[in-house]
Length: 468
Image 1 (tube, rainbow, N blue to C red):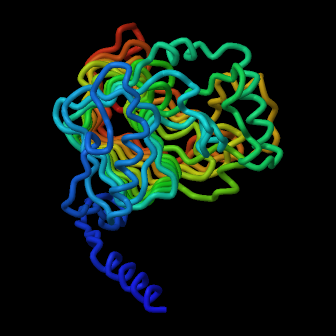
Image 2 (cartoon, rainbow, N blue to C red):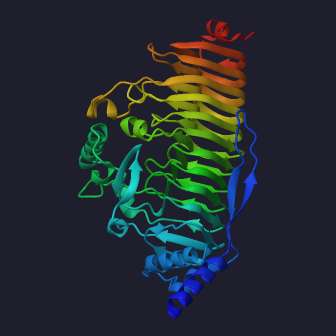
């Protein structure tokens, strides 16, 4: 009995001695109500990976040593897991709550590209469909208070993943199979895609159902799939990041079914879209019923990317209250703002704002397309039609050197686009035409100007936007 009491007392003292987690708040101004975002203040204690067996040598696998360090940090109540300067070869890194993975200046996490290293499969998603796939390289599931900080770099080996970029027939067949499973209510646990020649590449960073997250200061060079994917996360900040990934599907940051999030002072150099807000695909999104909302993107530079700000096309759970401002794309992007939906999505896109943005060249300053199906149009059927409500899209004070078209709004006759506003938008040179608008109501165009059009349509075009 005395021994039992002693053990209980020791346990109570250990719990009592654990450091406490604190928070600071970040106030964010937006044209919609926005709660202050909580940022974790981690306990002031460090856990250095070398103390748990990590060695910075080529061929040395540090996966287990890093996992031990993370577990020790978590057990002690939280703190920093420190990666010193050097190149550290590792497989997947799985987070636990209250852990800040801190990469010191000169530290490089060199992730292997052997798919077998990323098994067993974990619960993740692929283009809006939940499934069990190869582990993301940095993975967190149902964690609270996690961070990735420092001046170090994530640099995955890419040889295998580059081969998988091709997406051959076996991959497309497996992708169609996953779509059918989702559409017919097959449980997520049964959707095992990390098999055979399916070649479903893992995300670089995928934090799933997490709360109070922070990414600050790190560099990224290369990614197998989407680079930073915040999935069903509540509360977070991504700042001072330098992200470069020019492979297939290499979006910069995807915020999916995520709320209360700030992206600021980041540089994106992408082979696909730069900043994207999503909310799941079709039946999975309707089941999860978790809109993306209250998202602010500010003071970012996009060196390359298909889209500066993208919404969708996986947006069936709804997207609202997004504000991008004071960003620049000095070279070119395909579109500054691109809203994508189709007749399988449903959901809504509402209250989206872009303000104080400058760019070099673009195809479209603003585009809304309600019929974006890509390869899905012919390889899988429509199980259920749900039309997307699009209402309240605002673009103000945009400067663009050249564009093929200023704006194109392609709504759906069954539920036209509502309330689009473009004010104080100037394009120096237009190469094709000013606009194309179908099935859109209450489109307000005010002080949208251009210097010249590279054809003889100028007089005809003046009447559309009031140029003199």
